[in-house]
Image (cartoon, rainbow, N blue to C red; front, side):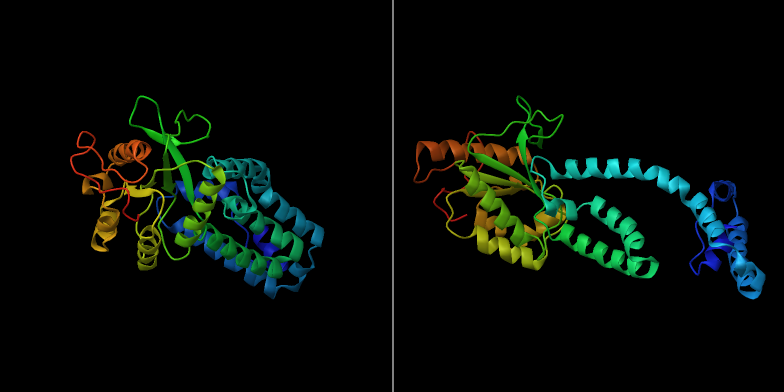
Length: 309
């Protein structure tokens, strides 16, 4: 009946009902799937060939489609609630903004649901596809970072200001965790927004640690950008850490590690990089001009703080 209704309405065959889905899951061969496909094609051909079948009242077709989609309609409140909570979790300690909403799965979900209802099947489907592509680009081109701190008495690090987190901010440090690969679409916006937030906070920062645990690669544009921006004379040091093997190879071959003058062993473990950063913060507080990191904190000297990083 659902296939007949979809054929008469001029649309695509709707999804199988619960009984058909269960039969497909229990079938160990491909006969059930083949039979279901043949049944849909036969229903379309039969509805097109027999004029009497095209006189089914629209209300009957609507009732059939409504029954077919009832399970999805009942699950919509649960899905929306789940997507809202996911958007809040992904935002971390940062305040909610329209940009964070447009870059979330919730925006894509609402665009897919509302566009056909408001604009019709054809125009709404086209509009939904365009909006979903724009939202996806907004997500990947966003700043994508969050601030993290250390759980007192441990070497564990977690996001700041999120429910269930006991991490605390470290004095004189900013630990920033990137949320994904760095490429030409997000590296500049990340630097710009992070710099603006740091200046607005009024906090004195001696060292910034970039946690790259979620960065799987950096494209050539990102490497050039960070070498240019981090190579400028800055009032603070910058260290990178928690890098995977691919990212470590990229930053070493590009000369970024040599420019930052940080010990190579701090690239793999965040806690080691934070210990070096804490030593830099202490030395900066003692001497605002320049100081080197003591050998009691790390096995190598990390360079003077007057180097432009």
